[in-house]
Image (cartoon, rainbow, N blue to C red; front, side, top):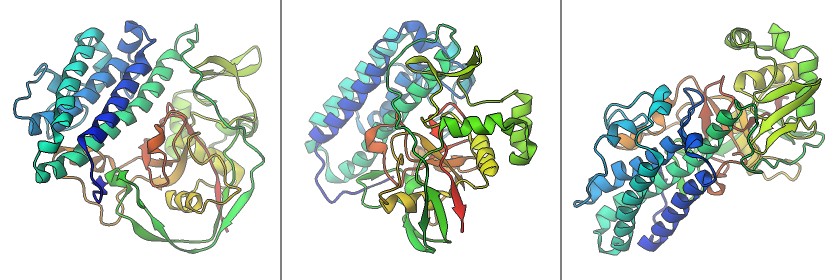
Length: 405
């Protein structure tokens, strides 16, 4: 992560951003029970209570401990309990067992958040008194930890949805899932040439979004709209899940081992497809974009259609063009690309433990672009690179197709 520091950042600016972020995390949990925030539905997901504590741990670990001399930790054991994956900090409590952490309870976690909030607010109030060279180190770290908590806010929603999906009462949480209908897709052509890829003038960006570099692309087309539920139903009804020619070897093995025959959260009731949403169980609407498909499913669908997934460079070039026909690019669904998650030319991890934030995960995962209905608005940008393993379905992920010409 690099910052544009050609303008003055005040403690007041940082405080407002900090408070907005912290308050929003609490608001996500406001109408949930203690049991809701405690449970863990799978190893890849975390209890919401853990998210609240871990994001607090990040401010304590990367800001308060190294930069505030008189700061006193709330509980020394939290360094182990709420460290996610930072090996430079120390050992971590096993991720698949986070739901077993009944202690600290929700009230204590909230006390922990208040303890750290008080110390952070004091830091912001005294920010003008901090030496410029220390400010220069602090500002990027504070912005990183704020953006880190914002990332977790999306995970809180997707983890909660996965948890609630197991409940036969189909709990209603919110009406956040508002999607634009898919129109008939047109193939938009882009000429071969050299294009700039990576962060461009954004005030904040994660380290994996840079450095900006040049990339040569061949002629290609990209679809104007996302793939709809109706499109995907055609794939299902044509035996797509039973046809090995469309699937990668590992994908075919997994869908057969796990008896997968439809997108996550779909259920057939009395002959009709329904899907679980955060607003309860709803009929599958043919014109809405298909969601909660993993890379394996997206790739198989593309093969069935005789097309392919775009590379992340093709996707970014297309959306930066602001082509008037290109729709549903941002804030609807994360869109799978065919690009393996890897470092850009010249990439260097950040110094210290925060260098583990992105770089060490650049293996065996695929890039998604565009942001979803659960993504914080300030994270929606052309250069943002999300990444997940190819069998991950619980994020708000969808499909846009491309074709070489």
